Image 1 (cartoon, rainbow, N blue to C red):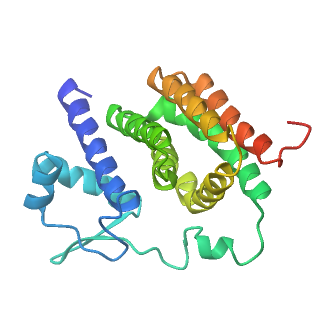
Image 2 (image 1 turned 60 degrees about the horizontal axis):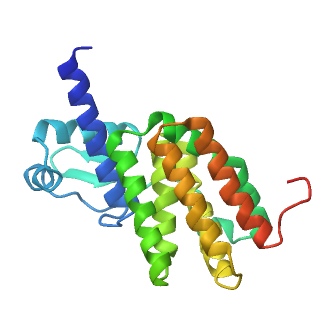
Length: 233
């Protein structure tokens, strides 16, 4: 592959990531919504229409977008044959905070490992941006739930694993519970701030082993603070 082709491929991946962020994090487009026309969307993302088309093709191949000939490009609505794991599914049976955090412990450290290896520069910058935004919100005593979700979401997306992406609603539920519980326990918020900084430094350095260890430590710190950590941990 030539240097020019590599550059174009990287731009297309960036565009795919930006559109995915608009759908999954910023909620600018929802399932069933039609994307703006090529000219408008390309200008919004600051890329050529050719690069935009390639980014859309990438997301179409992952069933995120649906190209309807003569009608435009739409955010896909997954069929019953491949449903995402949704919060409603999660709440059909009682699931306690311990189970949610154990699931995070099983999944997220390895997700951070792959994110350190696979993240594009733009994806890495997005992760760091959300991490720094959360630090400011902690310092200002603001509700950080949405930003923490976006931070972990951006790490999961950078791992480039579709199954992990589909687990995110469950991870969100755990984060929401964790933020609420942390408000009742002194020290947890500062642990979160320090853990996130350690994780961000590992990701910035693209040190996959350190990123995995930092994510595991972050989740274990929360579990211990909430009194839901087995002695084996």
